[in-house]
Amino acid sequence: MVVLGIDPGYAIVGWGIVNFTGISYQPLGFGAITTEADTDFHQRLEIIYDSITQIMTKSKPDAVAIEKLYFQNNQKTAMNVAQARGVILLSAQQQKIPIFEYTPLQIKTVVTGYGKAKKPQVMEMTRRLLHLKEVPKPDDTADALAIALCHIQANGSGIRRILSQGRL
Image (cartoon, rainbow, N blue to C red; front, side):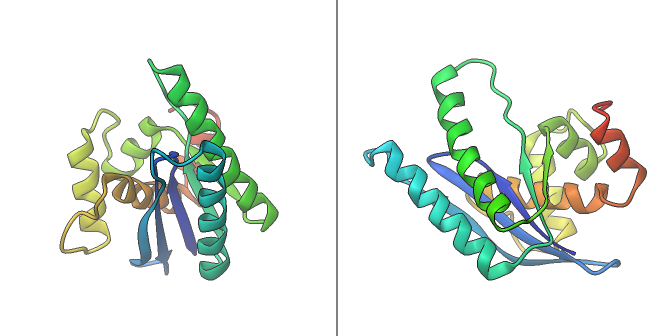
């Protein structure tokens, strides 16, 4: 199973592709799509769409796992991230790749076993599970790999049923 994990944003979109053979995880690629702050917002969306489409076309994932939006304060930022997330979802939908969404709590719980895990704990567990020498940078890339791992670990298990029922 090949999963493309995505940490959505409009300045930085983290992405990570993980293959799971049934016994081990293998990172197939990871990185970040970045857009410059002085670029027109609509152009930023186009850059994100074109880049993520290229990644999906090249990697041919079996599934796309993406973080659900969660914002407490800045509504403008939330709206812009939602728009960037929309072009990412559109790309996956156009390519008929199944989409799975996870909250930060779900990702932390599935990857570390603890829903209140701090970011460094999630990153370290991601590094260990993927046998990487270092935690990938920027943080959005490491987050995307954690999202892919979340889907792989939840897929085909009782965890997936619990997540889909919103009990976690």
